[in-house]
Image (cartoon, rainbow, N blue to C red; front, side):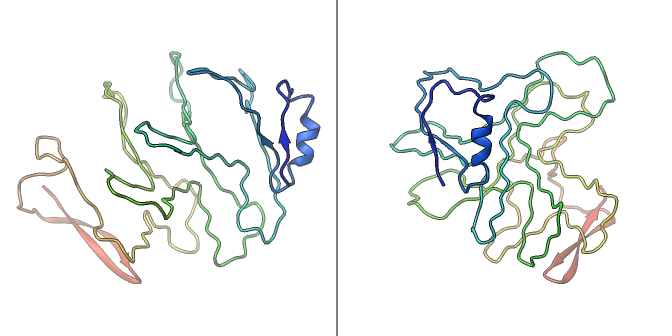
Length: 239
């Protein structure tokens, strides 16, 4: 069911019951009105200073055979030749004030994806993930720089010497246990991968993770890996 709403002055409070009645449909609602916002302008649906949400969309899906259900679906298309960047969804968080309270757990996250099973999962083909990035099939590729399912980019040039640690990628296991199947740091399904890792632009200057010396010291640690079902080990040497 698809419903188009063409009403320039609609109010969320007044239309709340109308929208809620549509939420159990395959497509809750579609706004087809073109807003003349102008270059560099924006219109806020809601502005809040306290509480959890400025805007919340909830979809309670009960279908059993539909291939995929999306609570929100945004599409951006480049319909003509151009060199400008195109991003469908941008999440930005900004700490614009000055903090005065230390040692309090706090998170500033641009985009947060999470998955939860509150019922009973019973499907050997089920895949649960908090975040998914895909490169879909198609197109004619005559030239490109990189193509990647996930891009982690560091752009901060400020002094961060007071920070305990900084990473391009941070992973943590905050569960109380790993009962059942073993928990892997990485799981790589790789029937058609050429290299495990490719380094580019690294230097051998002081502080770099690459050194010019080919002389290894005493083996200090081994890191367990699995290739298929076979246990293998990476050897780590001291300096």
